[in-house]
Length: 169
Image 1 (cartoon, rainbow, N blue to C red):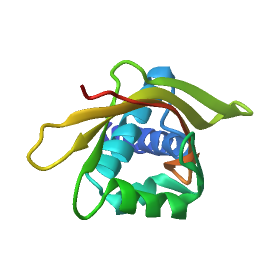
Image 2 (tube, rainbow, N blue to C red):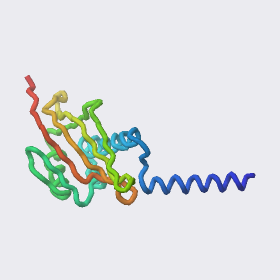
Image 3 (tube, rainbow, N blue to C red):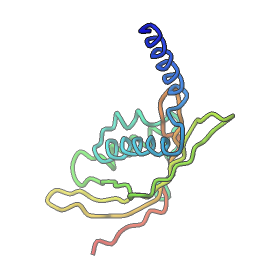
Image 4 (cartoon, rainbow, N blue to C red):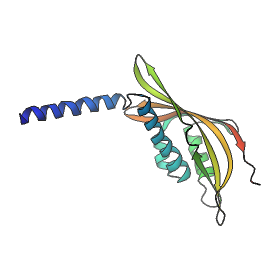
């Protein structure tokens, strides 16, 4: 009986690891949970905390980033801009916050197999300066295309648009 339990355990592990190699997503709630985790890694760790090495690991080698004010960037240009504009060594620091309840997810499939997720949401931007409370500077919308490559979710395309400055009066 113990041998049967052991074989059943091994088979279930093999089946679950095989399905994870294809994609860990079974339904829209799974997709939303994955996207929320990716959003946290991209923006909280990468943008807000400036963990740039970890940020770079989330980006597809052929990243296309489209910004309605700043133009287009590839992965290299995006990472250079992050280091220079978002993660300066001194001075004010931009901070990004996701607007609660705005994440939408849409699964992308080919021949019935999941290969990507579209993420759509809104976010707000703040400025962090020494000796001052955090203050809001703007808001925008974004759309991301995450693709599943070799067991990892990578950001392939990013659209950042409808940027609006916020009055601080």
